[in-house]
Image (cartoon, rainbow, N blue to C red; front, side, top):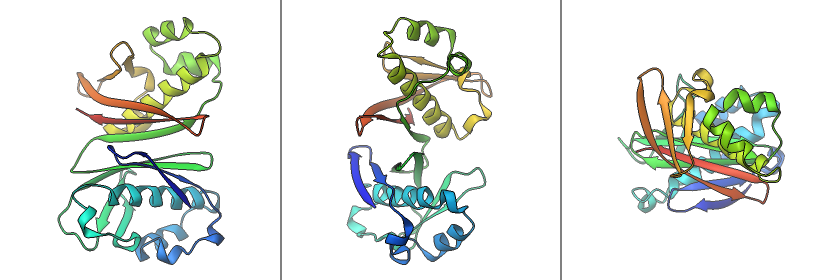
Length: 224
């Protein structure tokens, strides 16, 4: 599968999907991952593999690990009870790593960093959203900002906003159990500000976004 470095500073990697019958899976996935793959529904196998390959490439770029010359088989990405990836490296002991993975159509992206961090990534193809969906996941402030945009700019804005909220929810480890409308984005400062009702606190996150392959948006966020 073709790999591309999206952001070398943040260790963000994109992988374009390829049929599994063209891959030597035994050289790409650890025995534990191959066992997990058997239980994955056929329709989801390609993106599952692509996501792990993107994550492994991102892990290899972490400065603290570059000297270890890790192979794909040295790295296993298993699943934690909450669904987030659990990283195990056979040749490096007691090294805590955090990984986030996302998929859209035939592209998977991943970000990795050292330490127990709250980080998330999301990729979406720029598209039209229904008015009902837009009103459901936007705050009143965001919707007001959206209505001021031209019809040409609205799809990219909505897609970017959706990506940001998805990435934040992943970073918080709550998924869609926290409604996206509970997150407010301050575009004036390019900072994502989320009010998590579970804690009653305002949480500041570093958030960046970039266009990809002309019609996609990738968003990365990390707790400050």
